Image 1: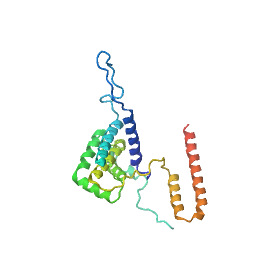
Image 2: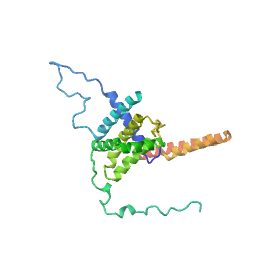
Image 3: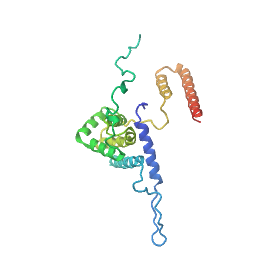
Image 4: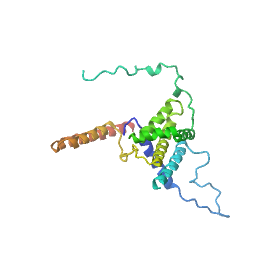
Length: 73
Length: 168
C-alpha cells in the first residue's frame, strides 16, 4: 500500500464502522397501548442530525449490500 | 555522478506565485456536502462513456483504490469538492467502481489485498523488501537477513515508543 494513497485505509475503516453499526442495530421493539414510551428509540438516528461520515457510511453500506447481491447471483 | 539531477521540478515557492483564489481549489467548492458529492460521482460513473473507460482500466490491472483516489483528487483540483469531503466519499467511490466491475463480470484488482495487519511506514516497506530479497537469495544468508529484520523491527518499536512518550 503506497503511503500516498489513502483509499485502502479509508475503505477498511469505513467497512469496520459499517459492520459495527449493523451489529449495534437491534430490532426495534415497540410497546403499544398505555405502556407505550414517548421517548425516541435510541438506535434510530434523529432526522437531520446525521454527520457527514454517517451519511457516507449509509451510502457505502447500501452499495456494498447491492454488490453482495450481485456476487451471490 | 550516478544520478541525473532533476531540473524540471517545481521551484520552491512556485505554488505561491499565482494570485490567491486563482486556482479552482482555492474557490468555494461546487459540491459542499457528502450527499452532493456522492450524487455527482454516481451520475458520472453511471454514464456509459465513463463506465467503458473504467472497465478498460480495471481490465488492464489497475487497482480500484488507485482509480478511486485519482478520481477524487482530480475533482478536488477541479474545485468540485473539498479534500475532507473527498476522503469521506472515497470508500463510496471504491464500492461504486467495484459494483460496476462485478456487474460487468470482469476480473479486477481491488487494491485492498493484505491490508488486515497494521502497516504503513518506511520501515515496514524496507522489511518487505528484505523479505523478498531473502526469498531470492540462498539459504546460507538467511540468518543475517533475519537479524537485520529483527534489528529494524526493534528500531521501529523504539521509535514508535518514543513518539508516544513525546505525545504524553
